[in-house]
Image 1 (cartoon, helix red, strand yellow):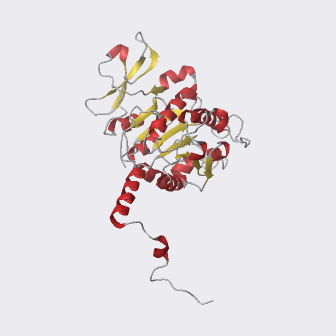
Image 2 (cartoon, one colour):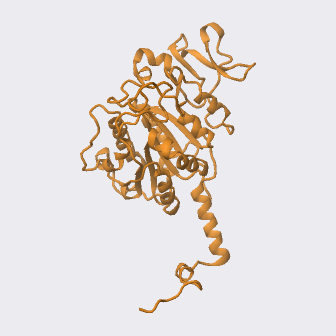
Image 3 (cartoon, one colour):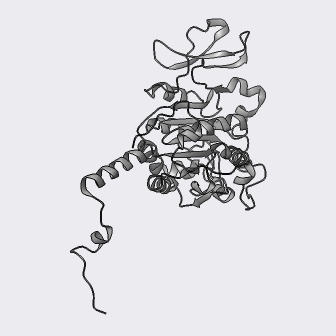
Length: 364
């Protein structure tokens, strides 16, 4: 067996092992009969709607799609998808999904998790799924707070965050999920925003087409315990100066459009320090502005881009696909190894192994 390259491929081609649906499907087909129970105004509703609306594009049989979640507000997701699913254990969704994806390659396996679930108790499981490059699509809802347990600070809460568990301000430096994923050698890393359906759908489409682990961080508003955490990225006036929309092969520009229709600011690399910085292109020109290469073999640029955003104000936040590279897929490597073992040694006898020389019968 060989893994095919899916550069520029459609999601259907990337999921070639998963049986296709014989019937034409719509968003309605992926809605379950369960009442959606999140707080009114929660960003989870927007993400759920986008995913339900996107799934028909894959053309997959619903019985071959699985959503696995951990614990948290976002982890109610499998109840609302008319597919198979599992509401699993706190932080363990990537581990459970790994077993499922590697043993059942005919399934499209999606993980839904939150910043607390994935980056606290589940941190170890997350980074190992990423480094192994299991064929999973991980949607990490980041609202920078523990919503289900009523508003404690989370691993992504900003330094000094006042919450019920940190009345004098959090002392913990926050994780940057995208930086963490790139550092763990993830082959696909992206970021999007719950309220930008067009952008969210485009990122989901790219993640589905990617062979291997795809991590998508979704900035998601918790209007009860952390309302307005991402307002700078959503307000039309502020967003132009705060959001850097990454597109492969395009100059990294943002800000108020100039005469050329592109943003008035650009991202460049300081020749002295090697650090990324932002310039005013109307004053300094466009020659030095970097062109985004999501497929670069080295993760250096993607990591540098992930560190551009200010942790407190989210000023200069890149969204889009930061990295998408081809790496051997764990599921395929394991299947090849098992096939070689059968050719070399023949099929194993599990019953014989379990009832070998070290077993005995107790007379009853």
